[in-house]
Image (cartoon, rainbow, N blue to C red):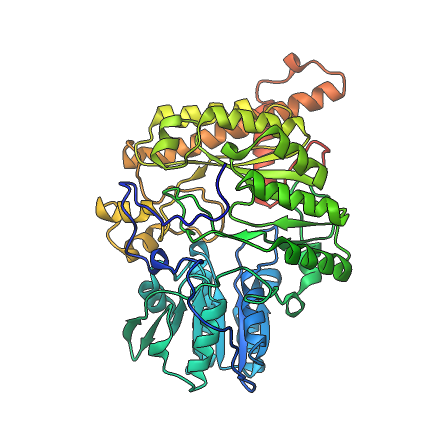
Length: 528
C-alpha cells in the first residue's frame, strides 16, 4: 500500500525528471509558500468564467472553475459564468453574452483535447472586445504556456492549481502590484513572452485555503439531469466531488502530475451533507485522479460515510495493486457501485516500460474481487506505447475478452497519445517523433474525447500500418461484444444460437456502431 503523503515528480521514459514544463517545478505542498492567507478587497472588478464545450455527451460539473469562483468571491469580485459545455452556445450567442456581461476579464480552464474550442472562444472575445484580458488555466497551458498563449491569443496562463495564483493575478490587474511579481504564471506583453516560474500551491485542500466550489453560479440542475454513466439510473441525482488532488504515481503517458494531497475528510463529509440537503442528491461522481490510493485512505473514507449515515451511491477511481478483499467489501458497504481501473495494457512488458507499476496478475485479481462484490468494473485500456507491436495488441485484446465475463457492455481500446506535459511527449521530441509543439498540434486533429487515433507513432510498426490495425482491433472487439448480445437475445426467446444467419453479427455490429456514434449505449437491461 502507498503512504498517503507522497509527492512524485513527473519522469521521462529514461527516468530523468521532466524539466521542460513549469508544472514539474511546482512547490511541494508541505512547504510554506505564503503566510498568512489573505484576500484583498477587489470590489468593483468583474470576471466571467467560461466553461468550454468538451463535446462529451455525459456532462460532469467541473470542480476547477467552481474553486476559482470561490477564490474570486473571497476578494469581493463580481463573478459570472458562461457554461458552453451544458448549453453548447454558437459563436453569435457567445459574442452576445460576452458583450452583455460588462466584463473585461475572462478566465477559462481546459485540457489539451479542448484546444480548438478554446481557440474558438478566445477569437470570439477578441473580435468583440479587442482589449479584454483573457486568462487560461488547467492542463492545456501548464506544460506549454507560450505555444498556447500565442495559439489562442490569450494574455495570461496560470501554471498548475490556480486558486491562490488567480488572486495574485487579479491584484496585479487591479494595479496593486506588477504582473512580473506574480509567481506561477506566464504571459504575453506586446508580443513578448514572460515566464514567472514556480506556481503557488495550496498547502492543504481545506475549506480555509481553497474553500468549496461555488456551485450556485453554475447551471447545477442541468448537470444533475445530464445523461448518467452506467450503472447509475437516469433518474438519480448526482454531482461531482473530490477526496484529494493529484496522483503519486508517474505513468509516462500522464500529463497531470502534481503533489498528492488528501482532503480533510470531516470537511468533505460536511460538504456532502450540504449538497445532499440543497440538491436532494442520491450520490456522487468522485472524480479524483486516484481515489483508492491506500487502505488507510479508503477505510477512513468509507467508515466516515457509514458513521455519518450517508445513504449514497458513488463511483471512484482505483489501482489494481491497492485492491484487497477488505477494501472492496468496505467500498460496497459504503455505497460504491463502480470502479474505474486504469489497466492500460494486456502485456506485462508494456506495463513495466510505461512505469505503471502494476502487472496482469494484479489486474485479474482486482477485477475478480470487485465483481464478486457486485461492483461494476470500468477500464482504461490503450495501444500505441513505445515498442508495441502486433503481439502486444493481441495480448491487450485477449485481456479485454477475458475480463468481459458477466458483462455485455462493449470495451474499446483507446489510442495512446503523448500529450504535452507527459514523459512520452518529451521522449517523442527528443527522438524526433515530434518536431515541436506546432507539429503535435497539427497531428492531433481530434476535437472530442474519442481518442480513436494514434497521432504519433511510437510503436515498432510502420506508420502506414499502426492506425489500420488499431481500427481493426476495435472492430474485432465490437464484433465480439455484439455476438454476445445477439446470442443472449436469441436465448431469451428460446432460440438456437447456432441457427443465427452468418451475417447477423455483422448486421448487429453495424447497428450498434451507429447507436454508439450517436451517444447511446446498450446495457443488460436493454435500455439505450
